[in-house]
Structures are given as structure tokens and as C-alpha cells.
Length: 167
Image 1 (cartoon, rainbow, N blue to C red):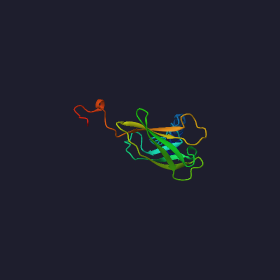
Image 2 (image 1 turned 135 degrees about the vertical axis):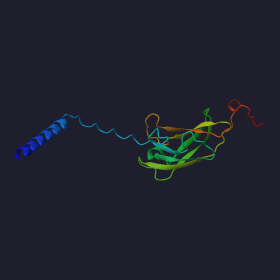
Image 3 (image 1 turned 60 degrees about the horizontal axis):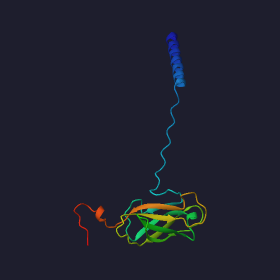
Image 4 (image 1 turned 60 degrees about the vertical axis):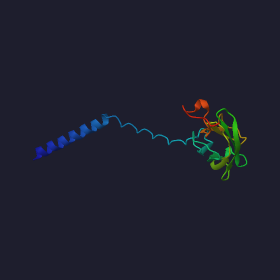
């Protein structure tokens, strides 16, 4: 009985020593990769202003309702200028976005604006949100550009084959 108990203890010790050696020799598990960062808003290039509507390449019809949020340092007297250009760089309209809260400090403050415009035959344009604050800003942080589609009529060159143009 003793010999079988001694053999069992000896076997158990041998197994434990083997497991300890195997675990010590195995490389540690690789660290899990960091999760990807959350997706950025559609338009957030400057970290100073975020546009919620219109989203990039959305159809912009008059009146164009613009919403988003900007840091307090983007505003001057609780507003900042907006300009809508057509694809050729012609100004279609301009106006001001108004803060919907206290535009002080570095936090984001919601804004709203509405622009009325006529776009003629333009089918593409750019909404430009200009920084109103006179505080110095890093390069490229003085304006945010949002590409938009405009409801203009296609020109002859752009019309579908067989389509007739109104007189």
C-alpha cells in the first residue's frame, strides 16, 4: 500500500514539476490590441467646430438649415459667419450661425443657422463656416468646408442622352 501511495505521490510531483516547467517555458499571451477609436463625426476636421446638418455631400435646398456645435473660442458675440459657394467659387449667400447657449470657454456650444439662396444651374457647392474669434488658430482651423450637392438644373453637356432642355 505504501509503495502504491509513494508511486502516486512521486507521479503527482513529477506531473506538477512538468506543468510548472511547461508554463514557465511558454511565452506570455500577447496583449489584446487596443480597440479602434470611435468613428469621428462626418465633418470634424478642425476640432473646433462640428456640423451635424448638412452632412458632407448632402443635397442642400433653400432654405438650408445648418446645425452643429462649435467651441466657445470659434464664436464672437455668440455668432460666426457662414458662406455658401457654388462649384465655381461664386458666392450664393452668406449669413451668421447663432449660438444656442453661452459661447464662452473651450467647451462645445450648439449653433443653428438658416440660409436662403438661389443656385441657378449649380449642382455642387461648398458651405464654409468661418471662425469669428480673433484669437490665433492653428493653420487650417480658421474655416471649415462642407461639400454639398445643389439642386441646380443640369447643363446641356451634363444632361442625359435624349433629354430635352426647357426653353
